[in-house]
Every structure is written in structure tokens, then in C-alpha cells.
Image (cartoon, rainbow, N blue to C red; front, top):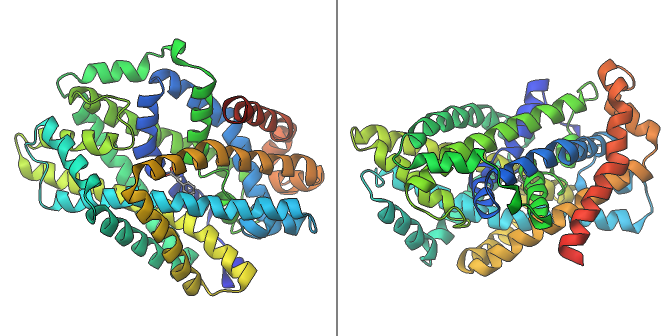
Length: 444
Ligand code: PHE
């Protein structure tokens, strides 16, 4: 397998590729509806805390494990600590979970592709909110349309992975991320000027902490892990491509800042439109597909062409952002099949396409399967796996080895000074907090 010898080209390439994995439907599709379902601004506060206190150490842990072992998620831990079945099992879960996520992730990718094609036909121009809502419900409940779109989306992503890490992933992330950033800012501008939008703004900035309970914390943590691609081996796998000279803490913090900024901006683009269109903020997974076209529809009041063009570019950017994330999910499986069964990149891609594609069809046709899979993966399995990773770094790896990775063998003075704090977070704070949240919410 040639993948092991490949390395990311530069510091920006590392942050961009990791941000490419992190920024995706999690920020644009999932974050706004999670905010809507779990209490608005109060959820955002929990999410920020979860990212700073827990996700960042988990991120550093995953890159450390990946870079130290130079292996993908499946073999990384057994490489560093051979002969222990339990870590092989954890490694296996770290391959299965991303593939499960990939199956339903591509369904949303397919919805985005569908809306991209609709944008080509300028079909959102001058639609009323109820017309916009019905476009989504008709599309998602039709039999063949979401399935065809889902398979097309997955097909393109798999094709890119089949062509290698550098060529595919780096090129993709470098274009899509700045484009999306720019567009979201344009959309915020439109969204906040819609009549009734101010309620949405209030919802985003005025926290009502009476809404916060243990469950909100679990959802916020799950969302933070999901959004940063943590707890599923994707970052371990990427970590294995990271250069020895790279600063793990800077890459982690850089990626987290990018990712947070995107999620919050997406919230500000979408929530005002949700309120302006009179949609329930807790409307669930369809939220952005029901609200965003309304922004385009009102943009089109004066100059329809502009609205059509902006909606086309927006959905294109979403499709690309979703693809960079999807690529990193597939990459986990490809690395596993290569390392374990010596399967070529292309053959692995074909196999994964069939497996994930098949499960995705079930998710696409059965909303209850979709919901359960998302709940189980994001709120339970990501937490379980992140817990295992920090326990591995804190209790199984030698402290000196962890120090060597995080400080680049002493070459990063700031990290040398921060090491004890980061290590304490990895060894004690993260495992205890994750375990408490997990056990109190989902296991007891
Ligand atoms: N972080 C991605 C997102 O926000 C989803 C993802 C999860 C991608 C895990 C890769 C691995 O959309």
C-alpha cells in the first residue's frame, strides 16, 4: 500500500486537509438543526465549551496516535501496543463507525446534490416559504430521486479517493473551503434582512440556560466530535500522513477554530431565515433544505439571475465540502482494507461503495433507520471511541512518547511549556468527562 509513504505537503496543506474533513455537513446541515432542537444559544455555549475542553485534547490525541504509529485507525493502537485484543477491537470499531456514518452522510450529500441541480433550473426563485418546504418533503419522500442522488454523490467521492491522498484531497479542500466561507457571509447578509429575521438572531445570541440538561451536554459533545471528525479514526488516519516536523497543537487548534467559525456562521445564515420563513427551529434534518431556499427565493425578488447563481454556487460549495468530509470517511476504510487484506486502493473503493451504498439506500428510504443510525453513531459511538483513544494515550502509551509527539521531541518550546496541561486534559479531564456524560445519558 503506497498510502503509508505519502505525506501532506505543507503546514497549510495539513490544516486545510483536516479542516476539509472537519468542515462539512456537520457544520452546515447538522449544527443548525441541533441548535434548533436543543435550545438555541444555550446549546451553542455548551458546544463551545465542549470543543475547547474536550474536543481539542481528543484531536491532539488522535493525531499523536496516528503520527506515532504511521498506521490507519485499525492498526494504529495495536502497532503501538501489540498483542492486546481489546485495542484491535477498538481499532475495528474505529473503522466500522465511520463507514456507518458514511452511509447516511452520503444521503444528505445526495440531497445537497439534488438541490444543486434544482438551482441550475433557478427553481427557488420567487417561491413562498410553504412552496420551499414542500419541495424538500416531496424530494425526500420520493422513492428513486434521493437514492439516485445518494449513489451519485457517493460514486464521485469514492472515485476521488481511488485516485490517492494528495491528488484528490488537497486539491479539493483548497478550493471549496474559501469559497464556502465567502458564500456563507453573503448569505448572512441576506438572511438577517428578511422580515422576521430578528427573532432568529435573538434565538442565537440569548442563551436560556433553563433548557440545558445532561442530554443537551451529551448532544453538544457529540456534535463537537462529529464536526471535528473525532472519535472515529479519521483524524488518526490523517495523523499518520502528518510530517514529523508539524506542530500537532497548532494544527489541532487551527482546525478547531476554522470549524467553530464555520458552524457559527452557518447558524447565523440559517436561523434568521428559519424564523423568517416561519419554520419550527426543531424541524430536524430537513431544516437547511427547508429554510435556505427561502433566502434565495427572496434574493430573487429583484434580480432572479443573481438568486439562481448564488443558490447554485452555495449548493455546489456544500456538495464539495460534504465530499471532502466523505473522502476522509472512505479513506479510513481504504487504509484498513489495504493494511489488513492487502487490497488495492481501487478494489477497496469498489467494495466500500457497494457496502456503504447499500446501507445508504436503506437510510434513504427509511427515515427511522437514518435517525437511529445518526443517534447511535454520533451520540454514543463517537463518545465511546474518543474515550478509548484518550485512555490509550493517557494510560497505555508511555508519557515520554506522547511528549515526544506533542512537543516534536522538545523542538516546540510553547508545546513543551503547555505539555503538562494538555497531558492532564488527555489523561484525566477528557476520559472522566466523556465517561460521565456517556454513562449518565445513554447507559444508565
Ligand atoms: N466532520 C464532518 C462534518 O462536519 C463529518 C465527518 C465526520 C467527516 C467524521 C469525517 C469523519 O461534516
